[in-house]
Amino acid sequence: MRNMTEIGRLVIVALVAFLVALGGAAPVAHADDDDDHKKHLVIGSIHVDAGAHQIVINGVNLTRRQRTTQVVLAGSPLGVVSAHPTQVAASLPIDIQPGDYRLMVSTGNGDSRTDFWDLTIGGAGLQGPPGPAGQNGKDGAPGLNGQNGMDGAAVAAVRRQAWRATTFSDAASVRARLAVTNARAGLLALYTGGTLAHEARLVLEPLIGPVGGNVGTAATSAHRVMDLGADEFTRGRPHPMIDPSARDGLVREAGRTAGVGVLLLDLVLGRAAHPDPARSLAAAIGDARREAERDGRALRVVASVVGTDADPQDRAAQIDALKHAGVEVLPSNTQAARFAALALDPTLAPKILGDT
Image (tube, rainbow, N blue to C red; front, side, top):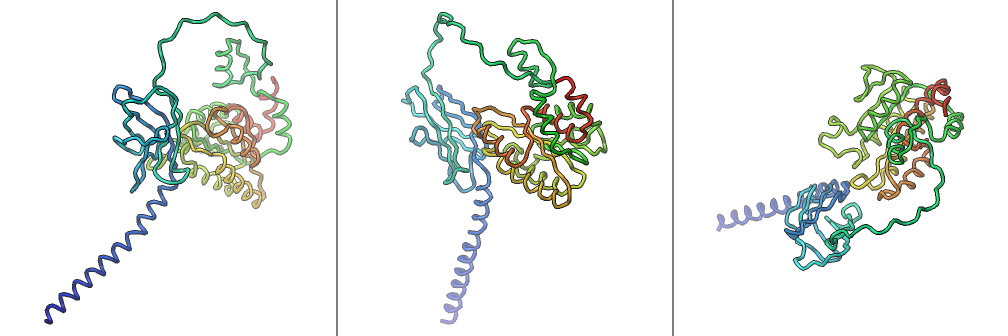
């Protein structure tokens, strides 16, 4: 009888230990779930393989730990063939009709875990013969002059016009904005676009001298240009166009750095980019400017927004958010770089603005 009692106690102890272990595992799963919640699911592109009756979805965060990825086409769930964080394949119905459809990919409840894509399946026949040419429309209003750099030359090429090199599309506005205040100390450029960072360096160095940073030519300089999309910043973490939190932190740090007087930024829009990058950037800029003011300094922030009105982030709203935070928003990256140079050194005005 005593042996049976001892065995019973051992069974009870083991059962209690098992239940405690189960209870202790829940917070770990919850923490993983919280971490995944911060990662936005974004569809980047869609490919329809009509022959295989499959649809392939490319993007980021298309799967989530301990969750099933759901693919829904026009309200009907599709069978998922394979699922990976950056690509999901699903079966299309054999009898699907040509037409326009809305696709949804979801890993759970909430906007950050769901994304939509409008697509057309089938229905495209052979191209017919060209119709007769229509009458010419009325001439539109003249556009702004082009600028040096990628933007002005490209516009001139598309319009088949002669390229006249100018520094600003609205020099009078630039003069008025520069008259408000001028910065002191050095420049810090924090770019999410590597090409834009290199272009800014090419514009800046003839005006303010060699710059440092991971795209600069100087080992030491008061001015730095940083490409935050480079390998050293993206190893083990998302690109800053997708997750802007790393740059937001560096912007706040700039407000506490006495050697920074001008902050030069880019904001890149488009599919697979963050759905609202200006919101967190504007908050970080506000914090940085307040830190600088408490230290008796003025922090001038200059930026350009790369995108179109057709981008999902709403380009006009992104620009308004930056302007509300006190940012000088210029029409292009080259103009933003020149404006930053003028904010650092107003004596450059005759050289930069003299021919505009």
